[in-house]
Image 1 (spheres, rainbow, N blue to C red):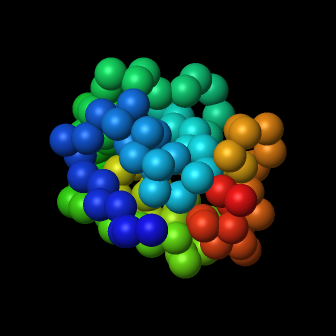
Image 2 (image 1 turned 60 degrees about the vertical axis):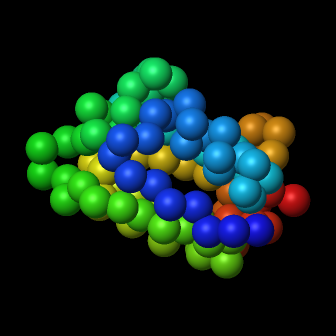
Length: 104
């Protein structure tokens, strides 16, 4: 399991596919930082969704990172919300668990 590097040029669809491939867990990507409302369009880049006050840059995530920490770090960097769900996308992962554990 390798680290996953995420930057603003990445499309939502690519991010979700790479996340699933690397960690086995599902990544839900929303249009807003609050994770309420609509999911982000799969063809949109992260930069096109980024809020004006988000710092941008790159986020690197490994399987040993806590789910809650990753979700906060992602929101800070990109100004959009993500939630980690189990492999079947039926339940959200525990924020205190690791990303790798969410995919099992």
